[in-house]
Length: 100
Image 1 (cartoon, rainbow, N blue to C red):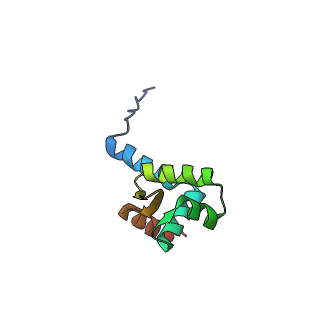
Image 2 (cartoon, rainbow, N blue to C red):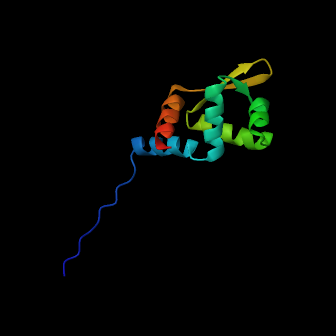
Image 3 (cartoon, one colour):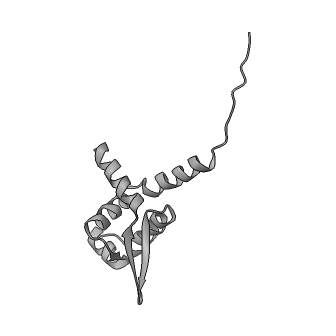
């Protein structure tokens, strides 16, 4: 009986980057936030929280993860932080639309 040695490849930089992006939007609340920001180009944390009827802390954590994945941009306007979509987010929303 002959055994074959399987080759385990470590993920490269490209696949790790893609994983980070996918994990960034792999939550129903984060997808809701992306869709909300597509409909309303710039919103602050309070507006997002209010419109989605979620806690500020929850909205903040989801926005942090979206920003870390490069899906949301932050713009500082005085004491407010306005959130908007990146170009990548628009592509992801189109992709998600094709899924269902």
